[in-house]
Length: 213
Image (cartoon, rainbow, N blue to C red; front, side, top):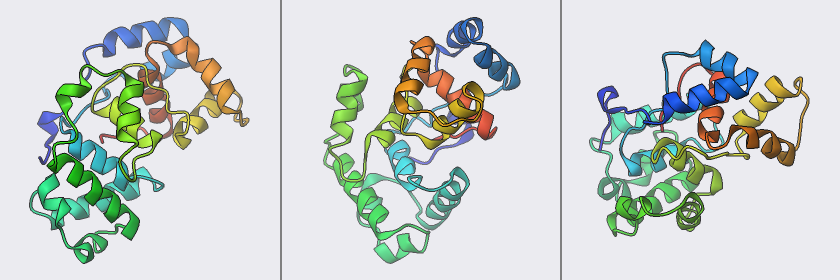
């Protein structure tokens, strides 16, 4: 289940979304022009996406990538079966907290037991998938939303709890003044049905290096 750059794929709707957002929102127009050659991509592995999201909880993108690189350098094969039985000391040595180790191994058991199905997800709406995933230990709404955006490529996800999105909205639309989530939600109504794409470009405005969960 290891991924390689050649496996990364972009959403089919990306160009259409960019055209629509550029035509309707001056900030989006500027950001899309600023980052013309990069897009949202998927590694194609549901388990890896969720595992990387857990690793990345409450730490910077750079720190999360460092921890993940240590994991893949330490464990020969990143699969649910292997991760579920990996020694805790080995995982702690990669920089994982005891809590994140518990979360990763619980997630691994859900995959190993066949409780999560990509076939079923294809027929579920975004909220139903969020409800299913947040029943797993360590997966909150934010992690489920990252899964919807990065793995399932759902086009209209708005992760209002994401600190990066909050910062970027305040910076580009409100003169760096803090605003509440309702104000953010109301602003984002103008991006529908492409709120995932708008979110991705706002992330890029803070960190040009694309995130790939």
